[in-house]
Image (cartoon, rainbow, N blue to C red; front, top):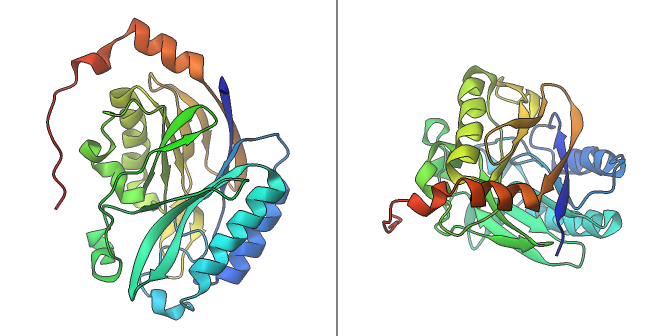
Length: 259
């Protein structure tokens, strides 16, 4: 069991509705990761941008990108996580893939589709929270708009790390900053958020603010520019803080019923 988990957070612009160009872009960025890391985190819909017209992209591109993730994970000997447009059984999903170097795969479909942009009309919403055991850490991966809903992220499973991948626009970036910190504090878990930068095909601007917060909500990484952030998470920090401040013991008990 690892006592540390080393992450590379890749904050990047995205090429609008062009999976091939984005795979090339992120291949170069992943190849440039200069530290020995366990996990590489990419933004939401990293192969297309936050598109509400997935039919503009060939329906087999999701499988191509998943296979590309598996290839890069094996080459780099690090897990890779990010969400992509995925077509399956006649439906589109905003699907997060967590790919491990040995070929292991976990997927999570975005639960809270972004109604303001009409995502709920285009993409099928997920219904299942996913927890991933990786190198001695229990991870809870979520996607963008999920960040606004604390009950969905509620730490009843004693996970260690929350991971949010996002396309969160500049005009609401204060909410992103505030809620990432809040999710860390209330769940006594590391909270990681990876956003994009640049302007998308619809003219929306993104300012990054990819960040990492420790169990007490202290910011340990932050960026507003195109770069790779390196973060090390420590198991001892989680254990010692939860032992000293036993706030999770006082959680209210209730059952979550999804609609």
